[in-house]
Image (cartoon, rainbow, N blue to C red; front, side, top):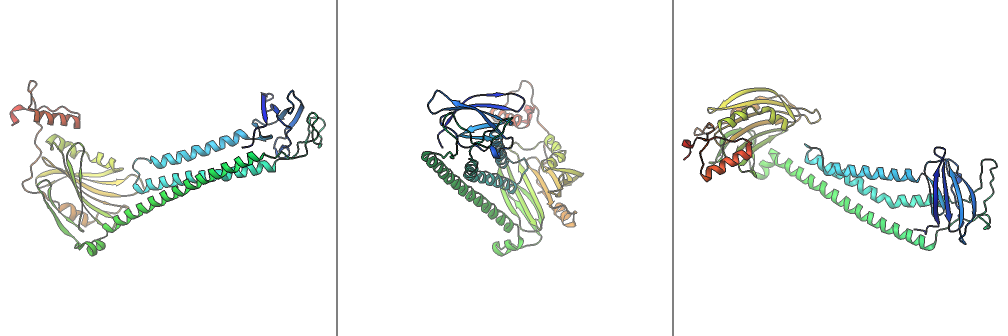
Amino acid sequence: MPKTIFRRRGVRRSGGAVQELWVDFRRPIASHQAGRQRFGPRLEGCARQRQPDAVRCRILCQSGSVSVRDGLVTEGGKRGGIFLLLIVVAVTAIGYIGAHPVAGATREQRAAAMGTGLGTLFSFFFAIPWITVAIRHVQRRAKQPIRQTSSTAPSSQPIGYGGYGPAHTKAKPTAQGNRNLWIGLGVGGGVCALLLVLGIAFIVSAVKKQARRAEVRKMMQDPEWREKHLGEKQGWQTYTDASPLYGFSVELPNPPIKQHQGFAAGGTQWIVMAHRDKETYSVVTIRPALGVDSQQAEQLLRSADQVAVGMQARVTSQRPVTVGGVAGTEFVYESLADKKSFNGRIRLFATSNMIFQVGWMVSPRAPLTSDVTRFLDSFQLPESVELPKPPTRLEMNYTPPPQLEFKVRSFEELTGESPQTDPTTQP
């Protein structure tokens, strides 16, 4: 940047927004955008100082923001800085929203928010060198000889500076200043262009990755594609899970997609689902590490509202149901938001070691059909299923064996309750 040729002496405010600025110039200034300024500043009191090449001037301006830089008296420096600060804050907020989306946002919504934030951020960085060039151009166009003005006798004659004569020539930056300016613009532009390219590459890669995932999910849910490439027969069929861990049978409109998951606290989850158009038929089987007692099963049958809240929905109706002697509950729900409308029906059952969630959902909302009833009524459990047992009790002075003590401690960590077990019921 050009070498600074001034030294500020002091600033004194008086009469509201009037600002008085005293400046020591290392050489006579010969440029001023007075004719372009909104409030018409005036220059007074210029005189020789003790330094050989110094002139002291007093500048009065009807503005709340006056700055002196490189021999230029400019207006609105603070407002420009505040404007740039607001832009940085806005870009930061967009980036934060993209990196930390609101709870419940889908994967596509998170990707869109992140892409918007990064695109805005890199666009702002790319525009910085061009903004700098534009400001420099305005400064050069504003360099006109300073005219002497006063409150009584305005004059259009150039002002003299303590023996230096009228200032007719324009103040030109030094060669070193110009070289530094272009080096800074080149380096800054190159870095911003590199960041822009990297940002665009990252956004394009993320969009393509999301598109590939969406295409794979769509193909896996397409019955015709599955029949053609996987050789799966389409149409209603009975799915039977005869594994020792999960045992049930159910009728599905298409071949199912299976998924197995584990929990950090112990236990597993087995998901079997089938898609048809915009409908999803699923059976979720949860096997807790400590099993399920009658008290937990009763709490589960009363948890319809909690399950609906987790899906951002509300329960519209509920009734008790049974399957193979196992008591359960059925509830109908619908979404709370109209923008993402869906509705469905869920049945919950609990045995001594398993929790079954049989559900149907459609998006957007659609009425329940006979196929939904067929699916829900077809769910069957094996005859050897065990019902939940009553909670066991512990006497006050009973010391359980290490294996039972571990189970009790795990139960307390999971539920926050202290079970009491009868020692006579333990092996």
